[in-house]
Length: 215
Length: 163
Image (cartoon, rainbow over all chains, first blue to last red):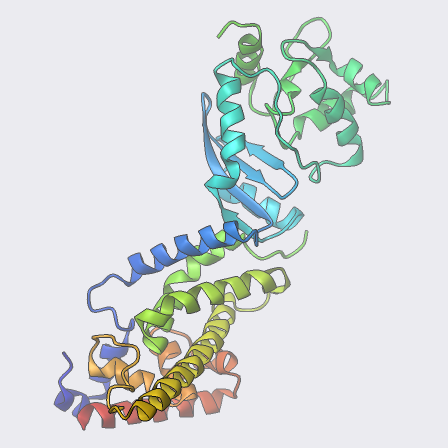
């Protein structure tokens, strides 16, 4: 309760009473957070966001996935900080990005099935807009490699129309924005060497073993 | 590299509390929820056009200020409609003024009854903690006029609460 007399004589008492607004029970921060959650739910329901993102559990730890209206656009390994991923998406595509776990339900479901060995082909719609023309040719060929099979970098390059571009194909595979789902782990060096992998060679080996039924 | 604004989710996380406090003080708890949603949805629509050099906090509070004005106008229309019906019914209109039906201290009722510019100046200064320059931007006047509105608002509040 504010005492009129003290306000009448002391300006700073009035200013102190005004500070922070009508938050006598200290609930403003929690109320604002709850209002923000309802807001995000409405933005998702009314399809006002261009990109939705959410964490996705995996045997590698927490992945971060992002979808647009077209489909899955990014899948990031745990080492990539989600803020960095979102800032890159804001620059490359749109800053209208909200946290939207429900938009990622199909991604979560298919990845769970894949990691448990019950899914061999992803049916998710993909958004290729982060990938340049050459990368698209390489990654589309890569996406067509069947579960459990592999190609060499040279073979993928040849299929993408640049027979001497094994190194360039390697670079395109290394910057695959949707690893696992676009199975760049199925591309090996000729002679059976693993080659490289953006998520680390241990994970590449793990995925190849999974697809050989070894997990 | 372009100067895209930060991802909108981060923008909400950073500014939600200032916007919420401003709206609760300006329109009351019962109308704050709708104003809050409308503020951020309007911000989302215009968001890609927000330039890197501008002050995002002042920008979103400018939108909140306008939504608060809309809410006050809508409330005045509702109050008028209720008053007309009650007048036709021959009932007393004495309780029409307390449409918001909140149980807050008289200070916040007094804030809400200030003229729009003074109300926003007081709320933006003390609740959202904006400097005079940004208050001026938000309510669309000169910095000097913003100072004056703030001063007059505070003087009126001192009178009201003392009365």
